[in-house]
Image 1 (cartoon, rainbow, N blue to C red):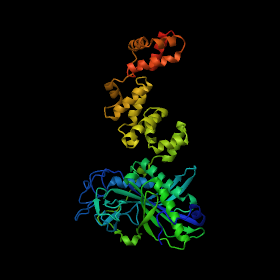
Image 2 (cartoon, helix red, strand yellow):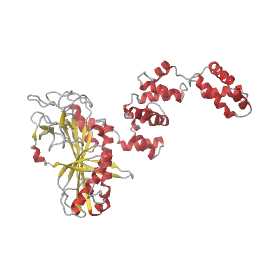
Image 3 (cartoon, rainbow, N blue to C red):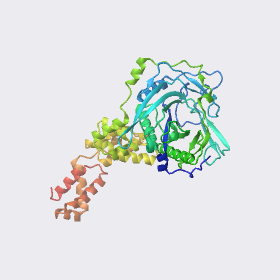
Image 4 (tube, rainbow, N blue to C red):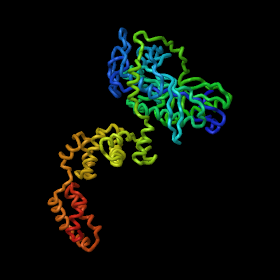
Length: 503
């Protein structure tokens, strides 16, 4: 029985009144190592197609894989951060299947002997509570290539006239993190699914093992969902929605599958075990029948030695695990005295770590937030990049803040200095000197500009002398314009008031 994309969906309240959802999340994470998993090809996103390939990652006859040590250490750190046991001995296997994006016709992965297993992640929820998600395993493997289908309206293979293969991604180090069945979530299942992937993304970013860019495919989520009538012990038939590529989409995909499956079960039909595609308008569509492990004909990889990380290595890597991101955020929020809403905004624009680093370089939290959360995020939006991708460092922003605090720059001049740094003109002090932006503190120069402004505005002078001191703003503005904003505005005002007998 099939269900149309936007029809025959059971109302969500009816779903959770009659059925208990069971979820399983499989998250694939590309590691940000310099080279691929089993060869020396560059691991860099965005290169021209098929320029980062070699006989090993193309699976040419006679080529042999060599394991990337940095990838193994990243896998161990991920396992430790997820409270997993780290295997004292494990090995790779060949996962055999044919698809054009897999040039060897098999994938080097781990089957029954993962490097990390039996862990958990305590996931923070919006209401301040946590939900423990148990981790089945985190195992190492290599990524596949990428197919681009041309000629179809959806960009998928159905209806395409041409398919192009790019093998730059083939062989990129990949960690697959698989949860145990997530039960008991009830109506909160979609929320918890999103919160889990969010927490996992934040944790991996804090570990600095991946850029976790879901929009670029370096973090991809497959969500498994099944329903069972409330009170029944055995699981229902599951579906697996593949390659969900945003946090919001994870929540939407789980909710949609719950409503779709409930409609089938409610009408007496049977859910088909299959993979499904997620569409950005919020629905899923059938993919292919879901394979079982035996379909892949796993066997041990004969060209790679087993991996046996020593206890000394594991303990050394354990010492590199940072504070959990959400605990770090709570501590920072209390130190800075900011609201939940402000903290959420800083996290959403990707500026929190940048602000914290700027504070570590000596800036106040207020000044650091003002720069990153306002001026610099505006610049990032203008350039169409993430704020973290701007060509300016927290140390440079802190240096600008220091120049303002020392009275060498006004806020207006400081913005010009930052623009110079963004343009590649050098460090803040160099930009300030090269552009001649330092605040003018020579009273003789400022007094000359004040005298000129007073002479040009006698009517304003009379108002000031008559007690309308607010009129002094016009003279101050004229002086600031004449000095290109480099005069100290407070000193200018003092000199204006003194000249008009109001000092």
